Each structure stands twice: as structure tokens, then as C-alpha cells.
Amino acid sequence: MWTVVYIAPTKTIADRICGILQNEGVLVHLKTVELDANDHGSIEIQVPEGEAEEATEIIAEHLGRLR
Image (tube, rainbow, N blue to C red; front, side, top):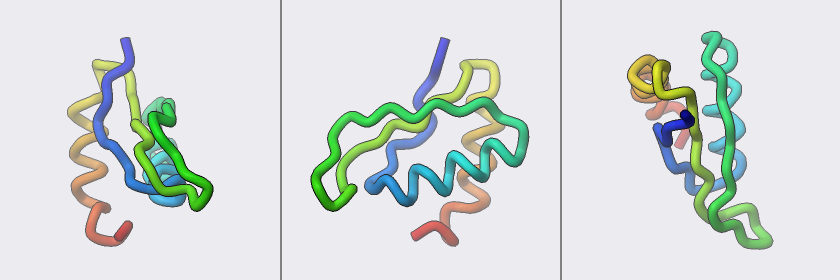
């Protein structure tokens, strides 16, 4: 089962977080909830339930550099 670990405000940020998680060996799925013509909106970053805690920690470590 996929679990949402972060909701990114832009496609660029979602892609960067996805890349970081994949580099750490975490499976990632992006689900666009809402996106406008400028790639702003809501993109869910989902990981398998068993990897959610690890993914959350990885995102927290990198979050300041993503904004």
C-alpha cells in the first residue's frame, strides 16, 4: 500500500524529492492532485507503507535545500 509522505507545491520540488528518495533506494510514486499551467499545485509523494518513516526522515534532512 502506498503512503503519502509529502505534498509538494510544485512539480519541480516533487521531482527533486523523488530523485533524492530514489538515490537513497526508496521506491517512489508521484500522484498529481492539482496542477496549473505553471506547474504549481499539489503533487503527492507516495512511498510503500514500510518505507514511510525512512522517507520522511530523508525528506526532513533535505527540505531546507529544496525551497
